[in-house]
Image 1 (cartoon, rainbow, N blue to C red):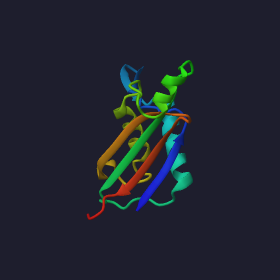
Image 2: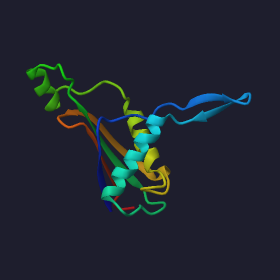
Image 3: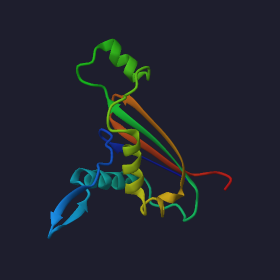
Length: 141
């Protein structure tokens, strides 16, 4: 089984938890931007997929984060970016993009992210900023 979906907009990474003092103690909370983006990920998944992967099924996740070309980029440089000669080495970090997607889909697309056995990730420039995600069961298991 394979499930694919696209998250529109500039790729975002998982933010670190924030802390506040409450009654002499500290309480951790997830920043609002992270909560909103995780909701957007789940909505994008649900718009294309209705099923959920079975428990214990080993899964592979492929993520392609497509970033917009900066506005004041010259024609030659823009072409090099769009053909993949120049890749985005800017934030968010790859691991934070992977983490927010896997955390958002945990319990939603699959029972537990412990089922993820392989991850393939790439960052590139594109005309349309978006994040493409493919989840599939690993054949032969």
